[in-house]
Image (cartoon, rainbow, N blue to C red; front, top):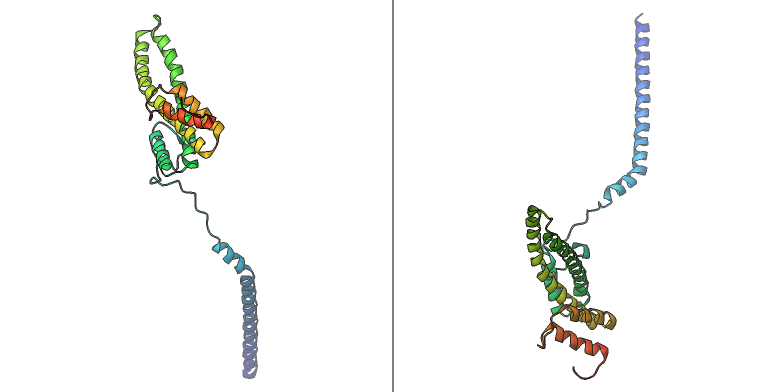
Length: 217
């Protein structure tokens, strides 16, 4: 019995050893498969992790030079003076294309503002002078007309000076046709003066040169 028991114990030990060996082999196979997968897939994972992320575009900082970042759609009553100042500084440095782009936008904006203000000013004045208009409505319109009275001289001056500068820059650029267009418009906008430094006289000097006329008149 004792021999049989020892034989049985030996069989159990052998089976345990065989199972351990089999499990060890399975673990080794799984480990090899894992390493195989890691080797073939890790380059793609590394490449994905190393791809640079796109940063969102940043708006121009507030410290940008006046007029440098102002686009056509951005011109408005609050920044028009900054745009004019920036363009003037560029002109003093001898630049042409930069200030020309800004001033053309200012010219278009001021022209539209003046048209709009004058359109409503004319109609408001008719309403105010109409006896059928209620007194309360007249008082509201008087306030609006006062505001228009402040806008008109401001934008008349801006358009006048800007129109001259655009003509001057086109002349400097060598575009005689566009230069003449803006400079002759100046003569329609400005009050005549015989002073040499007046806009009308400076426009005349440029126009004579563009026309190729000799002499002075």
